[in-house]
Image (cartoon, rainbow, N blue to C red):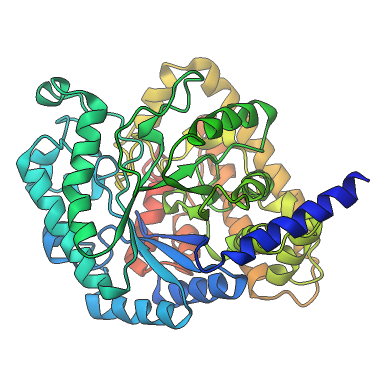
Length: 489
């Protein structure tokens, strides 16, 4: 009886979504933060998204397109505007609405690490957060916003103004004199007026409007109702405690008049540097997807945070699964997942094999250097940083080698089954390569943490990332991942 009821509910929710399909959003996040994706990969992801049923792309281009206002911060291998407009034209052909994302509070490292822009910082020692009380910051961001509008052109209907994880926001002497939320909304409005003048709807991440970690916190904001709130939660549905907390946060959204897009992830914090965790993300997507189909919500976005460095092509099952769970959910979610896995890796790769290989240990995130400072700086750590860090945490230092060895052995066991797949396709071959590099990575980590001699798999890691990134970006990514170990711990 429960299965029948579930099937009926799934069908009804499908009809409810389909009735508004021209209005409801199904968004894939194309994130260029830290990495420069190759053009062929971008095109492939666009086609994967379109075929799966997505109708919009959240473009977080950072400094990977040559915009005049950030001339000093542009990545050396950035797309020219002409090159990027060709990409946008293909997205147009695929009926994928573009939604640019421009960071306006935190995550401005790629700007404020440049000497020319250091005076924009809220704190001199932190490169991520803008001091929005400074007139020069507002003028800079307004000019950058206009660059985005010119680049994307008349196709724009929506614009995402970022605004998440601005931990130092409101901490400088001038900002401290203001009501924090009043200043937050004031700065957003200084930019949103430009968007409205072009008929573009503003949006913002939800987390700075309410601290989701505080159970009794409510959304206290004078944010105008025409903003879209992008609500992200990458843990809800994965464990009971996270689900309870997430449900409490979602209830606080209900009284708001703003439209709301729910956001899950195909890679996020906790994933290892090679594989997104299929088990964790699938649970999160399934849970949020069921909620996103309800009439109250404007749609669903699958974020893909590139700072985690997981290979994009190996996230395709999660992309397809998310679309299925929104657009045409099967009564049995396992059937949707099985189809998504087989579409990528072929019929000889079982769900169990995919789940065994493509996962990682969240307990080991501190022992690689992707975000050694806690920020998205995109620069390798200082020599000896991990050794000094672990010196103050002897129990962690004691436990890490065993955890790394366990992950290495688990991956080896899973890989043996993958190597027996007959007539492997390109995705299977890529997964095997990634697993082989991952094994060398954790072998190195184990030996280094035990104070033994080790070999750093730098060239192998560069080559692997080079499958999807520009040569310069692949080398930089390898340095970010292996930074603790390249020149000795």
